[in-house]
Length: 258
Image 1 (spheres, rainbow, N blue to C red):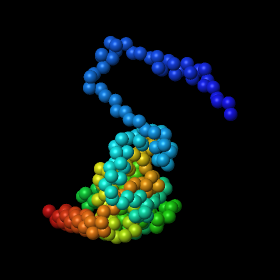
Image 2 (image 1 turned 180 degrees about the horizontal axis):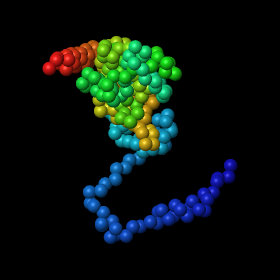
Image 3 (image 1 turned 90 degrees about the horizontal axis):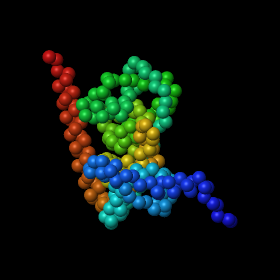
Image 4 (image 1 turned 60 degrees about the vertical axis):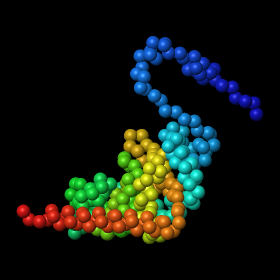
């Protein structure tokens, strides 16, 4: 096949770009503190990423170095999808109701407040049973992990017993460990700098950042010995239990009559 010739206009544009030479005085006027971060990525890395993305942030050196460092640990690495069921629901129109005709509901902001202060940020809300969506598929259970996937990316929460049976917004990715002993371990791991670097490398969107359940499922998880995993799980769940006890005490204090 005869090679295609570069259009004359494109060739001229390239010449103009390469011939551009700013005046020395304009360079000198720039603050000396300005720096530009740069790095190179091979075309193979673009195709191997499975995303076929060309935005630089997806190939940031921090995420590349993270994967390299994880491989150098000698630990077995598995994608998160091998260790847990992962999914999220699509958007829907909410219909609010009184408590007797709906289920308690929280979004990501409410969840942060519920796990920090024990109460939802805007007060309790109830999703009507008449909402045109599969409400049962939105209900979360104790021990599930929830990850923010719109706006603020990658915050991870563990559903406590008091939120069992609540309806959660579609903007939270559900992560259900296949084995109970992995709950605390995965919760701890997903909050690490190494896991967050992987999560944020998948960020996409125009004005609002997003990640999908499929992207999160590819996060690599290092697996130490079963003994080590169980130990991390136990310590993590104990810490979460202590936090729940503290929130219960705080809630009881608020209910004391003046």
